[in-house]
Image (tube, rainbow, N blue to C red):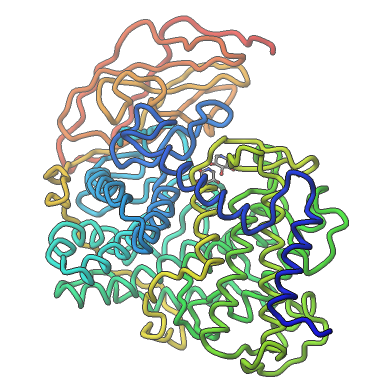
Length: 612
Ligand code: NOJ
Ligand code: NOJ
């Protein structure tokens, strides 16, 4: 008897259920269940009503409820924008309940744009937009950090543009124009002005040029030009798109994508950065040879293979998994943060990347294997050769290859499933030797990444962002810049800030310290942490010598204001902070004055190491 395809399908379905490990469901039902958990997990971390983040302001996405080791109880521009992009796409795919979160985010971000912070002020030149993270009520965070990070404005613009396009399609063009565009315009101004300056990468460790950042910046400018046209407004900065695209090409070294360039940090450059970038700029309408570097681009496929070959031998839990099978994936092989483990969000991103590539081949009705991508395909379809495969029937090589890539994608999700606790909660990382979840619990980005992966697997694709209209890069790249126009988005609730003139004040204090002790300056203004020690400015000991125990930090304070301040010692071994015994007073010189230096010497009790 010959069984029909349907019967075979049913049988194999039955069979896979029957052989599944006890208590483990098949992948489909895991994904359906986990997608719902992940969506709720993200919502639980958004103020003002998120169940896990009391104290967070409306529209602020908290990175994780974790307040110690690591303390992620802050709102990061990157995590927030990626989460909102997911929520906006979910909304567009039909989940209308999410609209209030989107509206809250719009208002929160309009205000946040104007908040002065250690990266700078909003006016006159937009520098404050490069700040990576804020307190969960939207106030500044003064602590030492890798700043600026220039992906945030691009990612926020992309999320807001997705929503704006939906508004236009649904008869609300004037709302997009008057309320949301002013926020987007500030962000695109920032991108157009600063894309060619180095900054910290998405992992907040490396100062240089980051593939993920540049790729998203390019998308934001292309999309921005189109949205501006649709709204009848001007995009300042969008003219930089071809130059950014030109620069994007320089991350490829002939074998893989070097995720951070203009750096010298002893790393290979093989980094999950190069998977997260392509999925963030995925365009279902794109051609695979588009210089926007889509998931189906040969160079990205080659890079994917080299990256997986690296991670396969990096983590014990990947031992014995053959090529062409999903593995646990992390940030980069040299990572030591929290033990340097695989991450949920990058493991599911690997799956999403492959689902994206398959979707693009199917949409183009062909896939081209070239010498660059051959090794990627060999791992999953050994008889592959360098040629074009056109779509055909279910037995065609095209169908076999795309099925093999889909199965490869599924196997990454299965790895994530294997290391997901029974309650479905997703932390940041899972242990490289044991697979046990660790680092920040309930990481919003882990949840967002699971949902976007599940969207792609279910065939839900965001509308094209216009890759086909992107202007080709010039033959020779030039490091250009367009001066931005920065205006508070008052229609969305931003305060009508005016340009604050600030003057550079260098806090220099002689303070003899033991190894492990740190010095901060704190004062009665926001710039100095408003007497909240968690928000005071850290001084650096780069100039500390035997002769002069100098601690120093360069700050910007409002011209003409009089501030009260003092220095604080942070002790080791969880001993309490030690404050200077009296307040100091400083009058900041008038607008336009040259930098001043305090030249102080510590007054008050000193500390002793706890010897822990
Ligand atoms: C905190 C950052 O968020 C993380 O990405 C980084 O690895 C660590 N700091 C160490 O620099
Ligand atoms: C550390 C990650 O490296 C960074 O990308 C992220 O923004 C923060 N944690 C917050 O989740």
